[in-house]
Image (cartoon, rainbow, N blue to C red; front, side, top):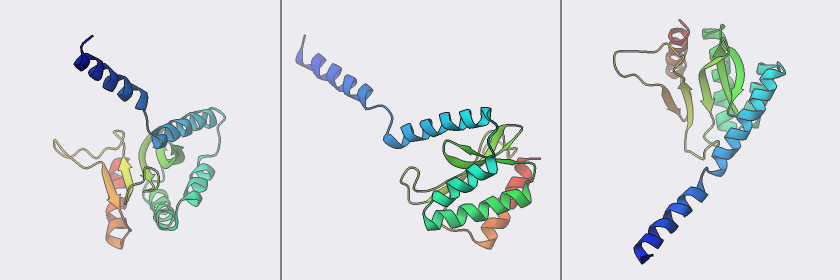
Length: 151
């Protein structure tokens, strides 16, 4: 075998071994636990509040406020966890979620919407927002998006 072929095969094999990051593996394990808990009809609100309580102070404050906004703006949504994150579902399907910046070691938290959210606006629209804090204007915008998402 030629040296270049050996090098290419070695690099390809190494890439395959690397696979998922530790954070990605942890998220998948959380998802398996959530699926088991859903089968056992576990209380979603308690699970979400427990996840929020585990977050660093800054993200915890935002997550608590977002939880209140979701409950007020979209009472049809049910709290549950999704890949270890607080999420809110309609008819068992996640519509929106909060991801702590700590989850994947990013400098901001994320509030996002799944494809179940009715936010379509032309041919392109945002489905996630980076958050470093929540202002009154941000809260109003999120509330309006939630109302639209469940309409």
